[in-house]
Length: 319
Ligand code: ADP
Ligand code: MG
Image 1: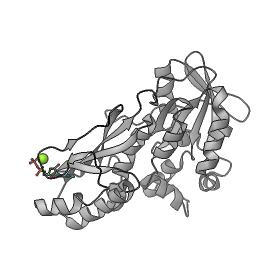
Image 2 (image 1 turned 120 degrees about the vertical axis):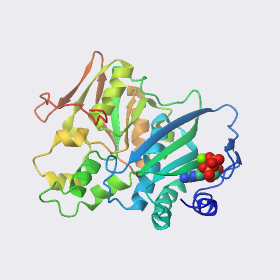
Image 3 (image 1 turned 180 degrees about the vertical axis):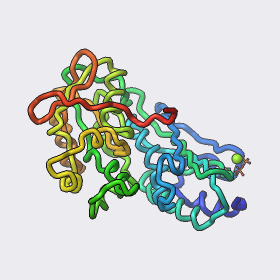
Image 4 (image 1 turned 30 degrees about the vertical axis):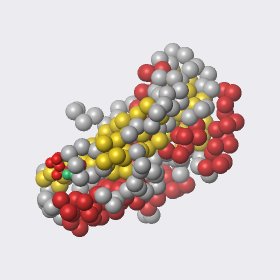
């Protein structure tokens, strides 16, 4: 394993430095000063080679994505990123791999005032665990349990690209020239941190779409104890995905393949014009795809306004 100087070299310079880090990398613990009046939002996610990414994924992309999926959780709560920890298990001492990994990690981290404050480095099967901490205003957290009947349902960006990118990476597509944008959505999702800050005063609930819209909107419905109707024809699809599928869209895959890392959020009827202004200001599609209803369950209407039968199953690691 790398000596401590090497650890320092890769980790200490990887991110921005923050004034609220009293003691960063180099001691037994980091010492952090939380700001008065804020609450901490904390989250952790592990990525395992062969499970969360194909084993031959470029180290830079693994570094970028391992942070991105964690920042996406902070975005889903409306939190501002502050501190991050990184626990690495590596099969061999491989400074070139580590350097590239940290380059990808750092490229994303440096978009935010986010500091790497510690971690752990061990030998074992390739696995990466990131732990992030962000700050939230106690009155302005985005949670899964706030949706109300009559709210509109929105999603950011386009859905299904990462799932199609993964099929391409795994060699499962017979055609599929030039799905570069889809592969890059798979490897380098943009966490919607800035969007979350802007919608936070207007959204009644939010979740990041990591397991596909059906599963993740399903979590909002369960926790908010309501139902929803979405119109498939409104679901935003990228030009690249539309060109690939033509007239035979694979809705099951688009809505359940996962890895989109877009936000799904709900908005009370009076606040919809604000969402339009935010979309324009950010130059990011924010699309109304349906409505929260009272009751239970999720109905997806096809182009003839008929319910389409889609299965909600997300990825279950223990099945
Ligand atoms: P200890 O044996 O006391 O746990 P380590 O040798 O594991 O100490 O770590 C020394 C310092 O380097 C600690 O501050 C730790 O947080 C930091 N560190 C180790 N691995 C990483 C990593 N992958 N990313 C960031 N910091 C790390
Ligand atoms: Mg340690």
